[in-house]
Length: 241
Image (tube, rainbow, N blue to C red; front, side, top):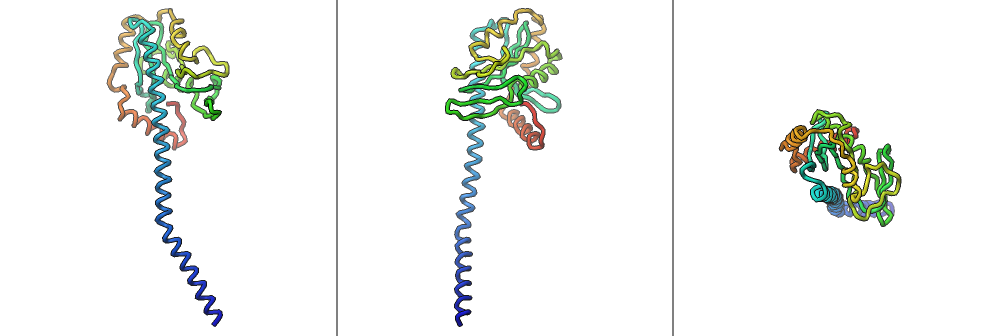
């Protein structure tokens, strides 16, 4: 009799546990969905913030170019998506001039920047002390110049690569080459090139090519470009953007 009572108690206890698990299951699924939604929202916010910073950096460069360079000699293009090796690359800022073609990668970062030209990743330290790594922008620009040289039929030597940090509270904390600069040094660096390498007709032709609507970074093309990068990243293939 005692054994039967113990057996009944055990069975009841197990049933209670199972019932408890069942009653919690919807809550668990709900929490799982909530966590998934939060993660997606976090990723979305991160992408939105990155896009916003990029747009701010581009506008600062645009204002600098249009207000401080003679528009009779310098023509500005921004946010183009150009084909390269069966893929594409998105270019922030391009300046066509008789003195060469300037390709500018703008970074709107507040804080300290550490890195060397040969490192694949540089370090961005925020005023709070938090540290983040980001792709070497010189490498990004190399791909941009490679794409433009093929598109325009030019030697890469006829391009000038510039990385400009546009936030007013940014400091470069390691020795960088002259073409990695703060926005205050951007225009003087461009103006140091005063030897003509292109004629007027050549510059007009370059501008005609880059004005092609096929290279405009529309929302649809940006989405295609981003998805292509994600597919390559997931397959283990790393590319500069």
